[in-house]
Image (cartoon, rainbow, N blue to C red; front, side, top):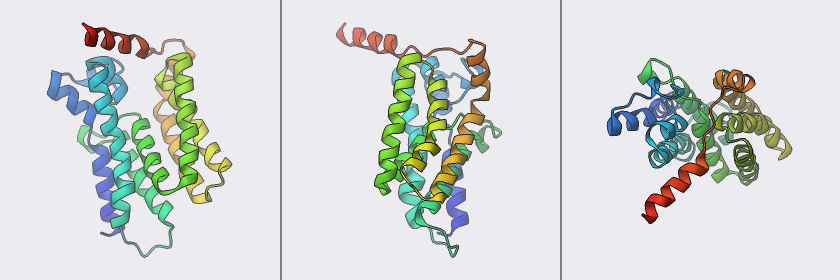
Length: 219
Protein backbone atom coordinates (compact mmCIF):
# COMPACT_ATOMS: atom_id res chain seq x y z
CA UNK A 1 0.00 0.00 0.00
CA UNK A 2 1.11 3.61 -0.44
CA UNK A 3 2.10 5.87 2.44
CA UNK A 4 -1.12 7.90 2.43
CA UNK A 5 -3.24 4.76 2.81
CA UNK A 6 -1.00 3.45 5.59
CA UNK A 7 -1.26 6.78 7.45
CA UNK A 8 -5.05 6.75 7.15
CA UNK A 9 -5.28 3.17 8.42
CA UNK A 10 -2.93 3.94 11.31
CA UNK A 11 -5.03 6.94 12.30
CA UNK A 12 -8.30 4.99 12.11
CA UNK A 13 -6.83 2.15 14.15
CA UNK A 14 -5.58 4.59 16.77
CA UNK A 15 -8.98 6.25 16.81
CA UNK A 16 -10.80 3.12 17.99
CA UNK A 17 -11.71 4.04 21.63
CA UNK A 18 -11.41 0.57 23.13
CA UNK A 19 -11.77 1.64 26.77
CA UNK A 20 -14.85 3.70 25.92
CA UNK A 21 -16.37 0.78 24.00
CA UNK A 22 -15.68 -1.71 26.81
CA UNK A 23 -17.28 0.55 29.42
CA UNK A 24 -20.30 1.19 27.23
CA UNK A 25 -20.87 -2.41 26.15
CA UNK A 26 -20.16 -4.15 29.47
CA UNK A 27 -21.67 -1.72 31.98
CA UNK A 28 -23.40 0.97 29.88
CA UNK A 29 -21.01 3.52 31.40
CA UNK A 30 -19.90 6.62 29.50
CA UNK A 31 -16.27 7.15 30.55
CA UNK A 32 -16.55 10.81 29.58
CA UNK A 33 -19.02 11.30 32.43
CA UNK A 34 -17.25 9.43 35.25
CA UNK A 35 -13.97 9.78 37.11
CA UNK A 36 -11.51 11.98 35.27
CA UNK A 37 -13.67 11.98 32.12
CA UNK A 38 -10.79 10.45 30.17
CA UNK A 39 -11.44 7.57 27.77
CA UNK A 40 -8.19 5.77 28.55
CA UNK A 41 -7.36 2.63 30.53
CA UNK A 42 -6.72 4.44 33.84
CA UNK A 43 -10.22 5.83 33.99
CA UNK A 44 -11.54 2.44 32.88
CA UNK A 45 -9.85 0.88 35.94
CA UNK A 46 -11.51 3.43 38.19
CA UNK A 47 -14.93 2.94 36.59
CA UNK A 48 -15.09 -0.82 35.95
CA UNK A 49 -12.26 -2.38 37.92
CA UNK A 50 -8.77 -3.73 37.47
CA UNK A 51 -9.49 -6.71 35.18
CA UNK A 52 -11.43 -4.77 32.56
CA UNK A 53 -8.95 -1.92 32.84
CA UNK A 54 -6.08 -4.27 31.96
CA UNK A 55 -7.98 -5.46 28.88
CA UNK A 56 -8.47 -1.84 27.80
CA UNK A 57 -4.79 -1.13 28.43
CA UNK A 58 -3.63 -4.06 26.29
CA UNK A 59 -5.96 -3.06 23.47
CA UNK A 60 -4.68 0.53 23.55
CA UNK A 61 -1.10 -0.76 23.49
CA UNK A 62 -1.93 -2.94 20.46
CA UNK A 63 -2.96 0.19 18.53
CA UNK A 64 0.66 1.30 18.66
CA UNK A 65 2.21 -2.08 17.91
CA UNK A 66 0.18 -3.02 14.82
CA UNK A 67 1.25 -0.08 12.58
CA UNK A 68 4.91 -0.68 13.44
CA UNK A 69 4.96 -4.45 13.01
CA UNK A 70 2.46 -4.98 10.18
CA UNK A 71 1.46 -1.81 8.32
CA UNK A 72 5.02 -0.48 7.92
CA UNK A 73 6.18 -3.67 6.21
CA UNK A 74 3.28 -3.42 3.75
CA UNK A 75 3.98 0.22 2.92
CA UNK A 76 5.95 1.44 -0.09
CA UNK A 77 7.04 5.02 -0.67
CA UNK A 78 9.24 6.91 -3.09
CA UNK A 79 10.31 9.29 -0.34
CA UNK A 80 13.89 9.03 0.89
CA UNK A 81 13.12 8.03 4.48
CA UNK A 82 14.55 5.26 6.65
CA UNK A 83 12.52 2.26 7.77
CA UNK A 84 12.66 3.57 11.36
CA UNK A 85 11.27 6.92 10.20
CA UNK A 86 8.48 5.20 8.28
CA UNK A 87 7.52 3.20 11.37
CA UNK A 88 7.64 6.30 13.53
CA UNK A 89 5.40 8.23 11.13
CA UNK A 90 2.79 5.47 11.29
CA UNK A 91 3.17 5.11 15.03
CA UNK A 92 2.79 8.84 15.59
CA UNK A 93 -0.31 8.82 13.38
CA UNK A 94 -1.82 6.08 15.53
CA UNK A 95 -1.09 8.12 18.67
CA UNK A 96 -2.82 11.10 17.05
CA UNK A 97 -5.82 8.87 16.40
CA UNK A 98 -6.01 7.91 20.07
CA UNK A 99 -5.54 11.48 21.28
CA UNK A 100 -7.97 13.00 18.81
CA UNK A 101 -10.33 10.22 17.77
CA UNK A 102 -12.65 10.85 14.84
CA UNK A 103 -15.24 8.60 16.49
CA UNK A 104 -15.70 10.86 19.54
CA UNK A 105 -15.62 14.31 17.97
CA UNK A 106 -11.81 14.40 18.11
CA UNK A 107 -11.74 14.13 21.92
CA UNK A 108 -9.55 11.21 22.94
CA UNK A 109 -7.22 9.89 25.61
CA UNK A 110 -3.77 10.80 26.86
CA UNK A 111 -1.94 8.51 24.43
CA UNK A 112 0.49 6.93 26.88
CA UNK A 113 -0.53 3.28 26.32
CA UNK A 114 -0.55 3.70 22.53
CA UNK A 115 2.81 5.48 22.68
CA UNK A 116 4.18 2.57 24.71
CA UNK A 117 2.83 0.22 22.04
CA UNK A 118 4.67 2.18 19.36
CA UNK A 119 7.88 1.91 21.36
CA UNK A 120 7.38 -1.83 21.86
CA UNK A 121 6.95 -2.23 18.12
CA UNK A 122 10.14 -0.27 17.49
CA UNK A 123 11.97 -2.26 20.17
CA UNK A 124 11.15 -5.51 18.35
CA UNK A 125 12.88 -4.09 15.28
CA UNK A 126 15.81 -2.33 17.00
CA UNK A 127 17.83 -3.67 19.95
CA UNK A 128 19.02 -0.21 21.03
CA UNK A 129 15.45 1.05 21.23
CA UNK A 130 14.61 -2.11 23.20
CA UNK A 131 17.27 -1.20 25.78
CA UNK A 132 16.03 2.39 25.99
CA UNK A 133 12.42 1.26 26.42
CA UNK A 134 13.39 -1.21 29.15
CA UNK A 135 14.82 1.65 31.18
CA UNK A 136 11.82 3.84 30.33
CA UNK A 137 9.44 1.17 31.64
CA UNK A 138 11.51 0.97 34.82
CA UNK A 139 11.29 4.76 35.22
CA UNK A 140 7.50 4.57 34.88
CA UNK A 141 7.06 1.75 37.40
CA UNK A 142 9.44 3.24 39.98
CA UNK A 143 7.75 6.64 39.76
CA UNK A 144 4.30 5.09 40.03
CA UNK A 145 5.31 2.77 42.87
CA UNK A 146 6.66 5.67 44.94
CA UNK A 147 3.90 8.23 44.36
CA UNK A 148 0.93 6.18 43.05
CA UNK A 149 0.09 8.75 40.38
CA UNK A 150 -0.33 7.33 36.86
CA UNK A 151 -0.15 10.84 35.42
CA UNK A 152 3.12 11.67 37.18
CA UNK A 153 4.70 8.39 36.07
CA UNK A 154 3.60 9.11 32.50
CA UNK A 155 4.93 12.69 32.56
CA UNK A 156 8.31 11.66 33.99
CA UNK A 157 8.57 8.89 31.39
CA UNK A 158 7.66 11.30 28.59
CA UNK A 159 10.42 13.66 29.69
CA UNK A 160 12.87 10.74 29.87
CA UNK A 161 12.09 9.36 26.40
CA UNK A 162 14.12 11.71 24.15
CA UNK A 163 16.96 11.71 26.70
CA UNK A 164 17.20 7.91 26.61
CA UNK A 165 17.03 7.85 22.80
CA UNK A 166 19.94 10.31 22.75
CA UNK A 167 21.95 8.36 25.33
CA UNK A 168 21.62 5.19 23.27
CA UNK A 169 22.73 7.12 20.18
CA UNK A 170 19.66 6.49 18.07
CA UNK A 171 19.51 8.44 14.81
CA UNK A 172 18.38 12.09 14.69
CA UNK A 173 15.12 11.06 13.03
CA UNK A 174 14.26 8.70 15.90
CA UNK A 175 15.20 11.32 18.50
CA UNK A 176 13.13 13.94 16.65
CA UNK A 177 10.03 11.75 16.68
CA UNK A 178 10.77 10.87 20.29
CA UNK A 179 10.65 14.57 21.14
CA UNK A 180 7.30 14.93 19.33
CA UNK A 181 5.84 11.96 21.23
CA UNK A 182 7.13 13.45 24.47
CA UNK A 183 5.55 16.83 23.73
CA UNK A 184 2.26 15.15 22.81
CA UNK A 185 2.19 13.22 26.08
CA UNK A 186 2.99 16.23 28.25
CA UNK A 187 0.50 18.43 26.40
CA UNK A 188 -2.26 15.85 26.92
CA UNK A 189 -1.46 15.86 30.64
CA UNK A 190 -1.67 19.62 31.13
CA UNK A 191 -4.79 19.33 33.32
CA UNK A 192 -3.10 16.58 35.35
CA UNK A 193 -0.04 18.79 35.83
CA UNK A 194 -2.26 21.55 37.21
CA UNK A 195 -3.97 19.12 39.62
CA UNK A 196 -0.59 17.75 40.73
CA UNK A 197 0.60 21.27 41.52
CA UNK A 198 -2.61 21.93 43.44
CA UNK A 199 -2.39 18.52 45.20
CA UNK A 200 -5.79 17.58 43.77
CA UNK A 201 -4.73 14.72 41.49
CA UNK A 202 -6.28 11.33 42.32
CA UNK A 203 -3.97 8.45 43.14
CA UNK A 204 -4.57 5.00 41.68
CA UNK A 205 -4.23 2.67 44.66
CA UNK A 206 -3.27 -0.39 42.68
CA UNK A 207 -2.02 -2.27 45.74
CA UNK A 208 -5.45 -2.34 47.38
CA UNK A 209 -7.06 -3.38 44.08
CA UNK A 210 -4.66 -6.33 43.74
CA UNK A 211 -5.24 -7.34 47.37
CA UNK A 212 -8.99 -7.19 46.78
CA UNK A 213 -8.66 -9.48 43.75
CA UNK A 214 -6.55 -11.90 45.77
CA UNK A 215 -9.17 -12.04 48.54
CA UNK A 216 -11.91 -12.73 46.00
CA UNK A 217 -9.83 -15.50 44.42
CA UNK A 218 -9.25 -17.16 47.80
CA UNK A 219 -12.85 -16.84 48.98
